[in-house]
Length: 107
Image (cartoon, rainbow, N blue to C red; front, side, top):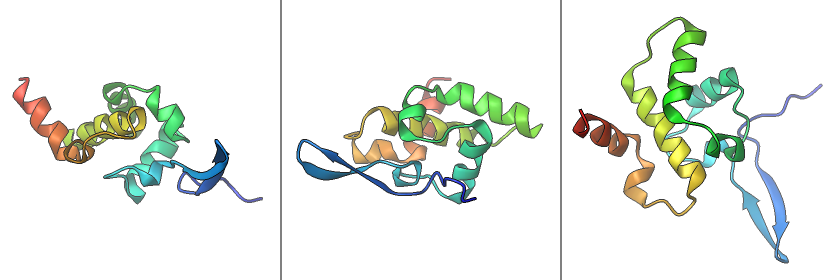
């Protein structure tokens, strides 16, 4: 039995034209390691991610792995959630380090 991959590309027809449905792997900064983390957390789609909270995902990952993850993982989750919610997010904000600067500036 084949398992569904979070990175699998699907196509959907919208308004008479074919448009690619965004996948987790389409988001900036999301590679194999983050895809494994999303899998562990039960996040399977961009739509599901858009309803999530980056801080909560980070805390859950820390609990599930029994390890305090690097804060850059938090920034990557926050960045991914922002991209999931806004497909037209400015290019600079599609980088996790933009979110790191914002997090550090708020301290």
